[in-house]
Image 1 (cartoon, rainbow, N blue to C red):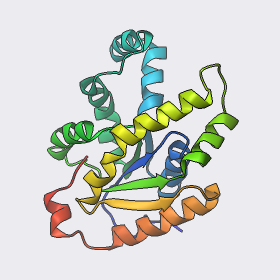
Image 2 (image 1 turned 90 degrees about the vertical axis):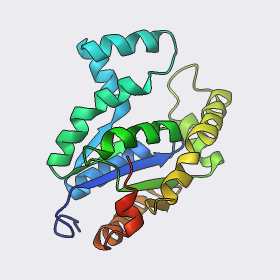
Image 3 (image 1 turned 60 degrees about the vertical axis):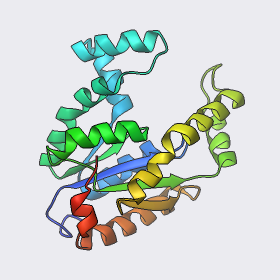
Length: 210
């Protein structure tokens, strides 16, 4: 099953979900399914730091201080990978934007470039399951239940409002992410096929976002 013949345009998808929801896993599987590029902001940040690039050196100072990397730096880092991916079929973006403010800033930048997100996919997973998953894969002393619950709380406060932001623009797909990986992937694929086969509404054309 493939979408390559469903629509010739580039496919631009955003994965949204709480820590432990499986965003990275599903983004990778969906990218492979449709022959597009998985763009993970976290992986890019780590690569820049490891390679000692200008962006990497700047980012490292924030990371070492435990501070958030400024939005402008993240968008600058993502610009080339996103543009390149758009030229070769599209992308699945994972890890950015994380807030409505970031989404609005990305819209202003990506809108004029024609690479804004077409569809956001929300992986909905109950909190108890998120905690179970993250405790199961915990690797360090900081991966305690209290820390995990705090990360989920931050997601609820900062990132969940993105769902309304995209839903208002008719760009949101809701998926039950608590099921087995293959079932989640299948659900995403089916809904994306339907979405990309439908003609864009006027609202989507007028309010395409990043």
